[in-house]
Length: 300
Length: 314
Image (cartoon, rainbow over all chains, first blue to last red; front, side, top):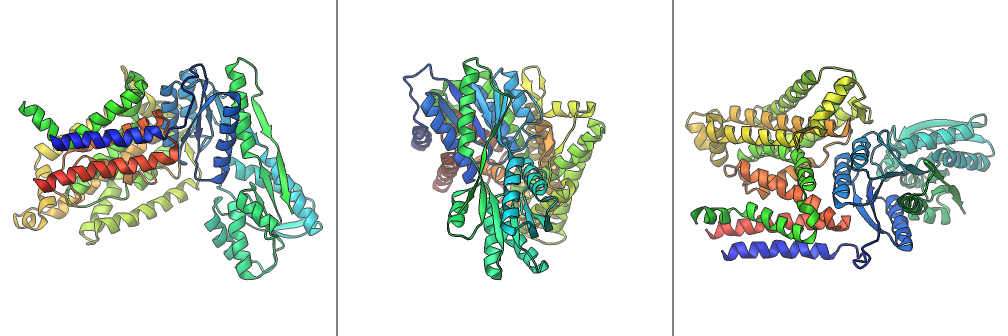
């Protein structure tokens, strides 16, 4: 019996301890609307920033934001959205792990009559009130134009691609290639490093072995760009690197001259616009079904 | 009174009940009918995998490959469905494929004399690679054919008020319970796990028992793959990665000994529910996501430690 009690007490303690960790919301403000955010991952600075932007905006507008982490797993995402529905949130913002797999989650919210906004990645099904994302094609163009400027319109470049099939990878590559087409800049190698820094390093090492002449690298994100920089440093060659996302590490690398430039998406802006749109929808106002967020080039 | 005493001895059940009570007090929405069904449906995938895992752990083995088997069979099923093949055929094919992969694991362990940990560790990576080759790294959508609609029902449909995956989970539990408690092979599984040598000397071919067990584990993983693919309407190349850990946690929380020979399906069912409730409750209690993993880890450790202490002091 004693053991039974101790077990119960321990369970109680643990659970209440963690309940204590929960985000401090104003319990007094019962009227406050609640926005649910199912975010693809909080293991990546970009999405951490996105969430921070949403949180700041929610505080400013006096709404409650509940964030759940899908840990890059579509099934977890589905469960999280269900949990948000059961919690009775007023509107759900989803930053999908995958545009196809999120369909069921969006449909579940539709069924519960909870409006859905998608952030950064879209959904290939279900009813979405508004989609808020960076214009990645424009960002790729921005990078391409800067490479043209730096190389004087002539040279050999390497393109490190993101996860094959991911819309961000497709769009950034498209923008970049559109920009350099018609110039004397030639893509000599094009390989995926799955948006990953370690893979960026190894893939670039291989490319450096294979290609005697490289003037610049365009990576679809900073993680791969930073990996590539490590490989280039080790090879003691002089190659310009342009990344994408403007993470803190990348900005520091641009500042120190290791990286030529990075295209800054404004993840905080995406999160913040999301909350703004959510509040508008809850107030019965109309919002655009597609809201592009601006990008900017960060260079020294 | 004796039944109550017996129940009080069932630690996993008590953890389950205590956790439910606490969560219900903190957030009354936890006990709404809709949420209970959500928890059961969310639990079904891990529960099905954990059932096969219970077999593997009962014979003193382990099957780390379940997540990859899930992903592989899910991808094959999605590809077949998207080309309009009959749902029944697809389900049977995926299940047979999973069983076959499990059988291969068993062969590596018996004929190849590999440690179960090592053999299935190899198949984890091998299969994940095959998934990437097969899917070319992209999700496979089940499409929008008639077959895909019927297939989707397996994951999203209801019979009466209860979601179909919950029925499937219950059927799997009942079958596993029956096999372990009322068939010869079930007794052989416990015997192999408690003392393999003695089992061999009593004339039982333990290698056949092992082949059976790993085939079962492969089949349940494939079934989970079907459920997850049907639910999402698409097979992700990364689907199932890390799921073996949740399954092992469910089995261990349910009181099954990693050394083999001791454990029950009822325990695993409760273990899977504890994990399902934890995942759901931490969300409902609005625990920030970074703390959720910390909480889950502590609960698992605390439950297993207390159970262990109890057993040692007996």
